[in-house]
Length: 126
Image (cartoon, rainbow, N blue to C red):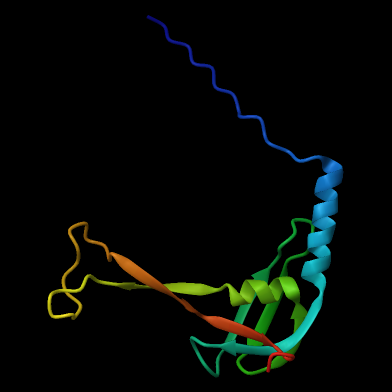
């Protein structure tokens, strides 16, 4: 018996081009607003952080290097990106004594907390 399956792509949900351009322009204007503030590298105080960043597809790829404690002026979109950089710290299950016990049945830590790695504080908040 011959079985034939026909697979086709799902149609993409595209917004109205005029409305989409309007929203992108609004977002670009918000992201490009310059903010002056202090960079703090919480994970490695006294260290530096270097990374490549591009938010909009048509933008160039830019390399940024920040040194702990420096005051600089960067775009608001980058400020949001830096302040949203977090890491997960996994914690193992607790036993009856309240100290870290063995791994749960599945073999993976059951809970975690998120801790901020870097912080950019605007000057007007300092």
